[in-house]
Picture 1 (cartoon, rainbow, N blue to C red):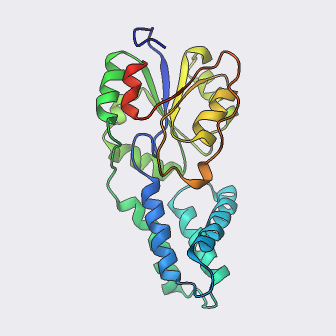
Picture 2: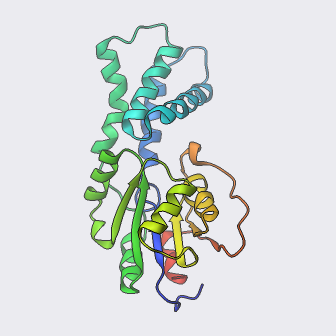
Picture 3: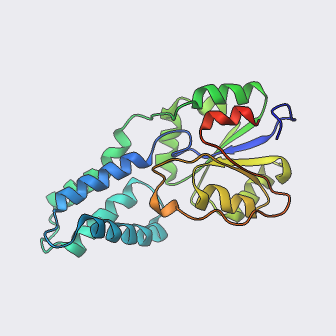
Length: 235
């Protein structure tokens, strides 16, 4: 698309697109695995157990630090002979809870690009999934909320959610774009909803968000960029 085209409506993912997120979860998991110090199971297998349990709990409770905390506790219960006494429970949970204390670190080029997009009068909507309280706090702490016409925090990003959001804001699918790092949440379901998509990859995208990019529906456009700042070359 030419950078001189008419303004577009852009849905922008938050975690690992606008700011760093998964690196803190990875640090928490790595520290927990060290703490567990399993004598027989290699760390790679412990991580596989965590992934499986985390997937199960996400289906029960959604996303966020509380889900990670519960996943780590359940992993400890499954792999350790030691009982999870209250003090130990708190220690394990703190690996996850400390994430909410980290400052928001914007990804390179985000501020300059948001300034550019706003100057081009693009309609920007922040569309993020996760725990409402946690995501709201991150949006407030990020210092970039004012760039967005609206903020949508949803439990999951799927095709129905994208269709609903387009309808809610009275947008046209052919002139709406979803920008994010996750093929599973940002790209594939958006394209299936008839929305154009921009993949801005992150080298530490969460493993549970990994998924091959699906076939592109007819009349839907897909861009794959190297950096967030590259949006300025297309919008």
